[in-house]
Length: 178
Picture (cartoon, rainbow, N blue to C red):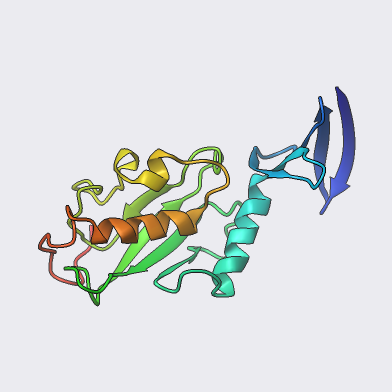
């Protein structure tokens, strides 16, 4: 194999080539996402590049307009703590409600899914009594892969609101929090 050291955005990176596969690694953070080059090589991009891309998409309002997400603290240089929001789908007990969520992208993100917790009180089969989203009960979290992101998680939670198990479940009074 071959190591090449370079500097990108003042952060040391290592490009690892092994049997036709390229890995782009930041020395201080784990890789986040695999992409293929036109010639078929696989490139893994650092965590913060992925999170900066997600931040830019959310700030520009790209994607599904029934969900929102952004940094909880603009001084969070590690891009760890995020706020999320979901507008309840029509034709359900969630219709017209806005649900606030807390999203934590640990240093293992996106190799592992973010930790998601509802701030707004909600009754759903995939949310425990403290507002924590149960990964095993949400397909996007249960089948997580590093190419997914916060947008897919929030969309999946909104889809769960429409499921037969959750669409008619009586909800706590609006405005209550965990």
